[in-house]
Image (cartoon, rainbow, N blue to C red; front, side, top):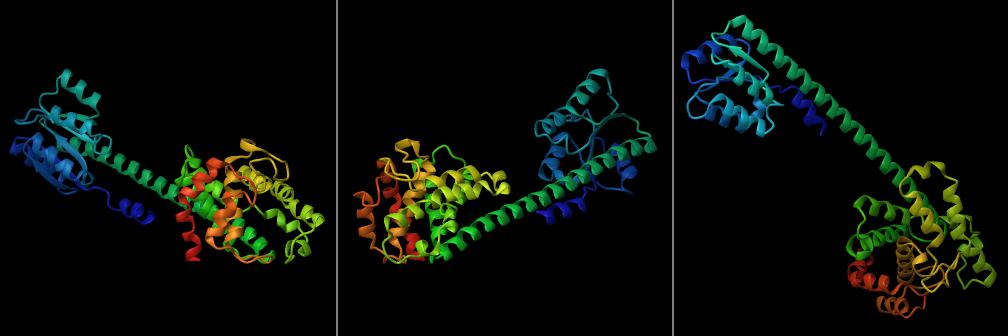
Length: 362
């Protein structure tokens, strides 16, 4: 984008279009301006309008007669105004019929100046040059603003990518600590995003919000950083006491996110905080840490909860082998891993054929 804007600065229009049905008048004006500009001519308003509409960017000014056959100057002005070209190309009326009615309508439409015939060469040159230079300066300033806006946008995008990379890096590091692949957090991200984009659970959410919720989902287990290795990586079944320690990762995750002030400025923060604490809640109230029931659990926490279970069942862990797809679906349907919102299950299984492809690619 920056290259396009810079090149536009150096391609300032250099052509003046003279629109007049009198060949002698066109010749006089051509002789005045041809030393400093490229000059094109049109014998009436219709031909002049066609030239302008075909390449409006090439003209730095239009000198327009009023009284012409086929299409007069005022009608030509009306067409240019309708297409909002009078803000881009300065138009001058060159006329011997400069009565009050003509001048009033012309100025109301946006003509830059009305110059009476017969023209005085140095006067018309000065008046046209001044306006052309004004328009060039305005274009140059506009282009500089565009360049600056593009650079600011680029910097903002770099900051967003950096923030996202840091968040994903931290989440992946925690997964490695628990002997998991970093693919787990990426799959949770992808499943969450897919559910929000392609089922009714994302209705009314803008794409940007969906992206932020998906980003927040990668931090669902961030609290595991506070869980001792002996519990986190135990290959067998946890004791009741060990399970209580493990369950604390939900509260620890919320508290950890609260201690990162920079993260609070990120749109994903509120979603991440909620998901970290509540992704183990269950529809029947038998989850943890707060025993939330039904719609007390946010939609995004419900989605991440289901995605987390689906992924845990589908992949090998330190304490178990991966289950086949049919067994995974059966265990989720019959509530072996906790009760989920029936509507959420309907939505999930309506797209599970696509979600399972994430594992086939891996």
